[in-house]
Image 1 (cartoon, helix red, strand yellow):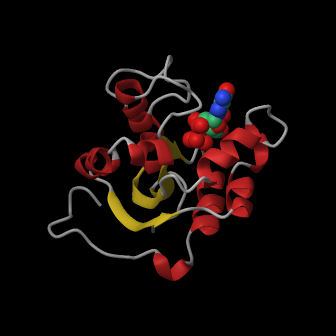
Image 2 (image 1 turned 30 degrees about the horizontal axis):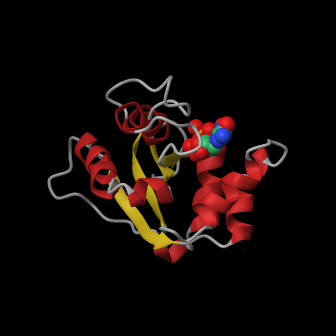
Image 3 (image 1 turned 135 degrees about the horizontal axis):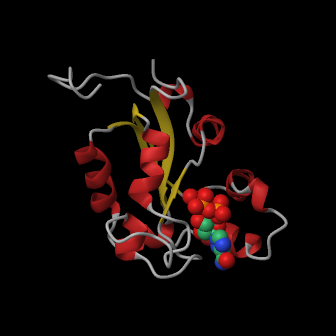
Length: 157
Ligand code: RTP
């Protein structure tokens, strides 16, 4: 079942405001969809400050934290919040996105192909089963996440 560690999982993926401003929404969705993953929740949202602070709560002590929160909440563009589902989607999603610092992100990854600055790295993806579970619960109500089947899905579900 979706949400089980190591099998069919769910992960939280967000296109950050800089990614939205740069016209990357379709590119991000394309890369996850063509890989074989299923989009089970999506919305545009300018996160309230409390949501952004909680999402990045483990970075509270870092010098870039206030700037990170204000960038996520500025409203210059919304965040595109998504839940993607499929086999190993948490780790595979991190590979599709690429390393946090664009200098370390492989060409062929989203950050490797499109970003140059760690403070404007366009996209977020949960880094573990535990954070995926927490982040999906932070950003979405249960009824905003849909169970649905691919047509002819026997090879990829
Ligand atoms: P994310 O949570 O956004 O997917 O990023 P991550 O796990 O790959 O990296 P993490 O270390 O959790 O950092 C979260 C976000 O903080 C911003 N950051 N800015 N200015 C800086 O030096 C700096 N360092 C990190 C980035 O937006 C990073 O994605």
